[in-house]
Length: 353
Ligand code: NAD
Ligand code: IPM
Ligand code: MN
Image 1 (cartoon, rainbow, N blue to C red):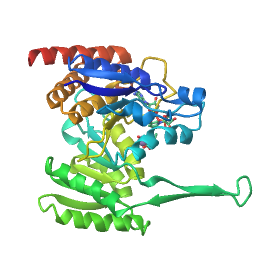
Image 2 (cartoon, rainbow, N blue to C red; image 1 turned 180 degrees about the vertical axis):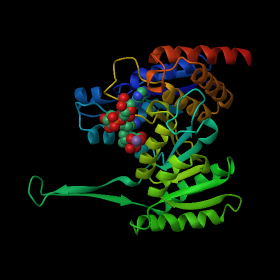
Image 3 (tube, helix red, strand yellow; image 1 turned 90 degrees about the vertical axis):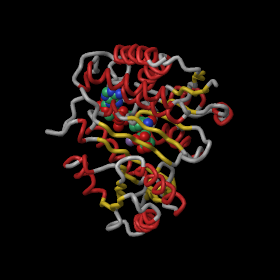
Image 4 (tube, helix red, strand yellow; image 1 turned 45 degrees about the vertical axis):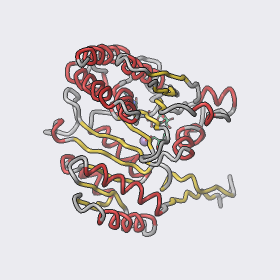
């Protein structure tokens, strides 16, 4: 059956890395039909909106979206992100953001004495509420009394579903859930978070649960990443911790993510963790690994587990043998890496036929 995937290349290095993710998927010879969508900052300049009014209709009939980053120096970031990425996550209720963190063989990591065997974490970030609920306001603009209020919103439903999913995932892995909290200083939202975590943990006697203050957790990720398995975090904490995690796995260009609503038929949205990287956009040097890895997560989500395994194996082979982009110690361009992954993926899928 044909799988319909919407392709949203986005801004900056987005189109450069998404082209390589598409190339890698196409090399697998699956019945995939792509619909390219030109939403993003250029769309804003033309129409005054990041998304068209009929974005829902455009996405209907698709099983997934493969997306590049959004953000352009010509627009305020809160306009572009609230106009597209955050809007889609919230409106589609894609409440779980999965971010696998592994140090792949051949990719230099910054932690001395740590290798691929020490880094295998899975971050599960709450994706629709918390600190990024979008609730707040500004008043008395331009006056000395000007005020800006940003309200964190934690709901029992929102907290429970993310934590429950963390435990379900831990059951399939090494059996540990670490919940990132800050209930010493934030005494409302995170106290609710902790209480719900305790309740959910009681339903999973086979999974170990620990509550760790987020500041100490950041230090532990660097000091002892091997002691972590599934990490459940709020929207803000998950955002920050996964850039740290990306650095641990070799850099921003490596990290992948899935925005999903587990247990529902909602389409998934897959994107690398990195941004539009205006500092290197247009140079053909961005690392496409995070985008290709995101395509692996997409394939898994749309029921193509074998193809996902093949593409991940191809990606790992290329990371180990090269070519690699310069951010991870090589000298290749985006396209050269993408072509190498595609060639390897074609070879591996031919072999498995
Ligand atoms: P960034 O991730 O774009 O860049 C941070 C650093 O990582 C830069 O030095 C950049 O060159 C490097 N980098 C990023 N991706 C890379 C890749 N594939 N290969 C090699 N190096 C890479 O973060 P930023 O600079 O804070 O943000 C830039 C813009 O992107 C802003 O407009 C921001 O709002 C937006 N942003 C969007 C998303 C998204 O849409 N998912 C995510 C993060 C940031
Ligand atoms: C990410 C990004 C986004 C986020 C921004 C661009 C809104 O940083 O996906 O990590 O904070 O969720
Ligand atoms: Mn981020």
